[in-house]
Length: 159
Image (cartoon, rainbow, N blue to C red; front, side, top):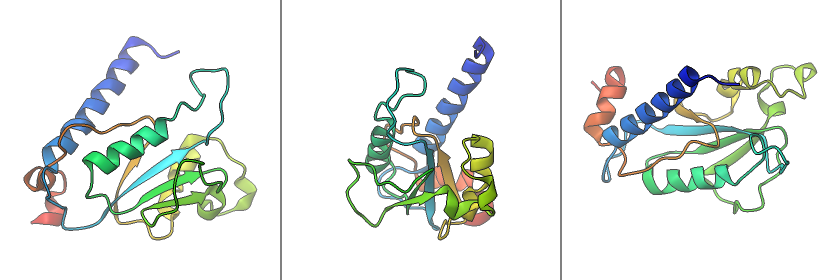
């Protein structure tokens, strides 16, 4: 069970991410390079455990990207199977990959270790050099980030 310090740190990190996003891209400013979003997702499994059951978090998180991060290039969803979620319409922006596409050796599969799965994100074909890793329970809000604010995040690439 998480103690109060861990919960505080997680909340602080979420507020920091929201602050950076709000600060660095507002209006119709786009970054000078493509930025993708990557999700790792278990799927639409509904269980009696509220902690692990699917409650449409990914659907709402994707909506928040659509509303507040229009500058996102592609959205990659990495999951155990390539089963298209029932509520995602076929489109060019959302691309679903399964673990067999990113793990270097199939003997490591099936794998539910999030640390191991996260290390294979860089193996996603077509992933931009710059990407943001989200869990399905991260939501964006407000007006986004301005170009000036984005330059603070990626100063080496923008100067």
